[in-house]
Length: 300
Ligand SMILES: *Cc1c(COP(=O)(O)O)cnc(C)c1O
Image (cartoon, rainbow, N blue to C red; front, side, top):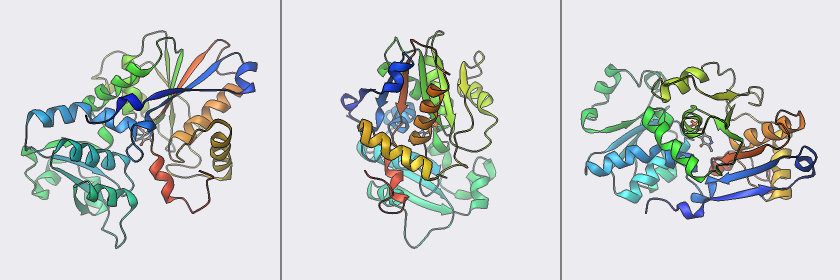
């Protein structure tokens, strides 16, 4: 069994605010699947892994930075399934590897470090030839699973969401998770994404590509909650995370899920969601990322 789907639960949050606004807020806890591996990543990998299992011995090759949840998930999944795998890491090798990369090595992923400049050209044929890894014999997964197959895997997350949900919310990195969810949601359900990067203006185009250019994507992305950009944070966000944990027993990561939850609380206060809404937020995991915060920043 690749990962334990039985561990996925839906957690209802209770708050006087939700009563006042006459709506409900549930969290789909994909973080429960594994303590280190982000839940949404395992879904995005689903069809790539299925392909690899049909072609025994064929390695998986993929890309990411030193803190990439995607690299960690790929390394873990490949170890579980006995698939050889290689990670191309952005930037020169540091003497002290990040927790993420240490995990990748423990799970048997071979790592190759390349300069940021070469990394920027990673999707060109020229680059692939220069790597000398026999790409033709590999299953290549784009960074973050950004691919139609990644989105198709993410669509499977909808199987765990209450059909009566009116709004489904998730953090946006590459938009692959949101694309999959929007494709699988029915037309009455709204899918809402919160970009965690500053100045993302191509989300609709991304979703369109990820869903094989089918119909206009039915998504709404709400800007203004990136806290200065990717992996940036301030005291406000940290306070919010600590309160969310103390008040609701909900741990979040500062890169993705905390920003998404902060946005949802703010939007509830601002009456974005009509009375009667049944909101489901997807906890996509990523908790291992909190290890990069200074000690004692968080109460959990
Ligand atoms: C990667 C990641 C996301 C973003 O998912 P995309 O499909 O790239 O948009 C959200 N949350 C966590 C915890 C992640 O690791």
